[in-house]
Image 1 (cartoon, rainbow, N blue to C red):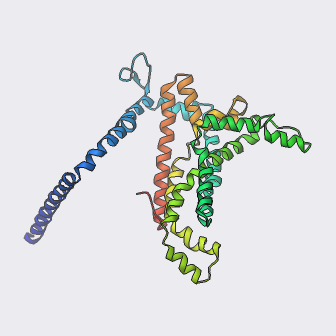
Image 2 (cartoon, rainbow, N blue to C red; image 1 turned 135 degrees about the vertical axis):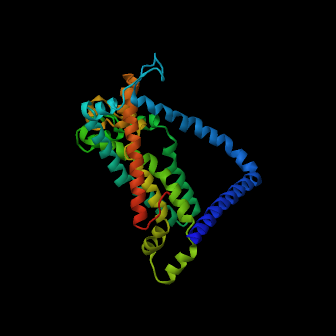
Image 3 (cartoon, rainbow, N blue to C red; image 1 turned 90 degrees about the vertical axis):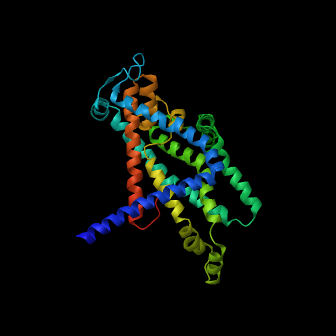
Amino acid sequence: MKTAMHLKQKNVVKEITGKKVYKNKVMKNIVKYRQLYIMMIPGILILLIFKYVPMLGIAVAFKDYIPAKGFFASQWVGLDHFKHLFFNSPEFINVFKNTIIISFYKLVIGFPIPIILAILINELRYIGHKRTIQTLIYLPHFLSWVIFGGIVYNVLSLSGPVNTLLQSIGLEPIMFMTKTNMFRGIVVGSSIFKESGWGTVVYLAAIVGVDPSLYEAAVVDGANRFQRIWNVTLPAIKGTIIVLLILRIGRILDVGFQQILVLYNPIVYNVADVFGTFVYRVGINQSNYSFATAAGLFKGVIGFALVRIANKISKKLGEAGIW
């Protein structure tokens, strides 16, 4: 009994001592690298002010928020807005369905394209060609969706190059932007065209970090170019691919508010209305701030849950995770 008590006391002493040593070590590091910590302060303040402080607004989802009364004086209504969203909102099911379908297409079709582009660019022999192609495929990313959406409208308009080509081969012109069976394809295609080039940046950085001796060993073993890509390049960047895939899964309910807002119109609402435009329309146009906040909070919670699930599955399969 005394031995057990003695061991317990020793463990407590060790734990206290360990905590003191850790605190002393942390303080020494702060003093040693104080210039770096001082440089971090503006970034931390910006993060707190623009990311964490606005989270207090989540409480609006549980209130009957009236701007005239203010945030604190508005009445608490509990989960009423969520009940209305799930059970009494005629648009919710359609909005949820459209969001999932468009996001699924973007994930399945759009996610692999930056990987393929990065590998193809890496396989180019001449540095000049690499830089030229990288510049060309990066450029669309720096255009706002207002500008890029205007380009899409002009290209697909009745007098645009696509319909001009169709008419030149004897076909009837098509009003692409009002066709419900084509609109989702236009959304996915324009998103891929605009963002795929920029998505190659991370993958190219990962490929550049691959040990050249691995490629040399593969060449000695008689591997052709495709085999080197399959057996050396892809396994080397697998961790990067998995991390970005997990983060992308977490944004499955975020299909690009600006893009949809610029491209859609009342004729295609049935296939184009997504969470972002729904929240904007209800919250800003109809001034129903509490209901819009509830919808936005639902979207955020689902995204967080999906990241957790995807990360857990990845780690159980023995792959890399984000934490």
